[in-house]
Length: 524
Image 1 (cartoon, rainbow, N blue to C red):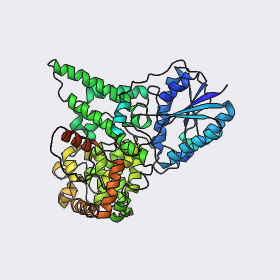
Image 2: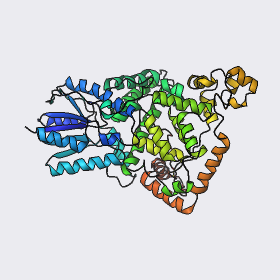
Image 3: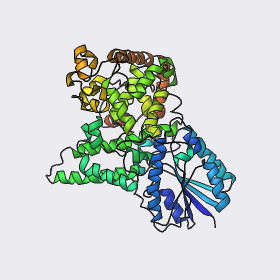
Image 4: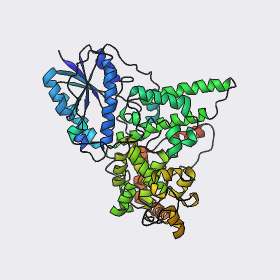
């Protein structure tokens, strides 16, 4: 008897899983499949921490499937190779999968699967996933389509699956010659853990979210911390949004009855807006699959002439720039696989504006560092934070200001840069200003125990900003920026202006194309 294959990619859950439900309704046996793909492992943005996280989430998925009569098969093979083997063994009737938005190699892989299925008489059904809309030519209708999809009823997990058993051991990273670095404070994997985390945020931890999400210490507790789960699909955006909306409705009823809601309503409303921005940024990659290879405004990028200075690049990667707060954030990221949204933006701003480093090499380093690496958000944000889109506001974050804002007394610095553990608070952000005697007393000689700043941060940053502004205003660069906005720009401001005019306001002259919005790789 022919079988259906449910191909799990970055959708490792049983709830809100249209492919699984469709296969269950077919009446045919189901083989649930996940791949550890050699082609993907070779990609420069992939790290072993991503693969190990997916395997750990998959283990929980397998438990959930077995409770419902299914089982997860994990193969070390590229997609066409795996499907050919399964077709020879079982005869595949239909392959069900979610639409996936990834960089070029995954797009090419999916096209190869479509061709293989057509050649072998196998149906390939791709189901929409979350708020990314296929085959759009521009952004004019995106928001309405996205909002309608997110508001659609949630899908519950099917029972009574006719699953094909799996008794063979799964491949491991060792089979691929890989070993993942051990991460501190790594989240609990799986759908059940993700739901519990979402509940704890919405009911207990999230009240200070609006102000607390910027700093790495406050965000560790008061941000949702759902990004690793969203990146592998152990929780759907639709379900998170529905949970947040339900909580908002409860809070508004509570407020209407005279109860206190503190900052909850504003924080959860801000969180829901970031769920929308999540899809907005991934939509960019859906419409331009080479964002990891080509700048959104390639002419602007070319004229910035940023070059890979190896000394600066290594110091930036390793957290040895001589800027204490930056170094603490980078070392914290490498140790945990996570840091707050503002620190991610600061890292890229420092690379691009202050150190004049190219966006792709620095972007790849961060992609491999983030446990929650989501290609659509990541490469869209890399463009924003390095000034290479031409449509976003220039945001060149001052490392000193960020440090003073989020770690005034230097506790975070001392934790992650132990060379500075005994430096007094008044000097912790600029230890080179200590006298030689004070450096000796603190056990930290700058230039020996801790680096001298690699450049003057304020001076170099200002020069970097000036260079970007000088290039952006060139007429041919502006023309490319206008085309970037047509393809990728948020329509929120344009819609608001149109609504304002229709309400009776006088017409205003058009404004230059510019997109603003959240400035984070992970929005949560």
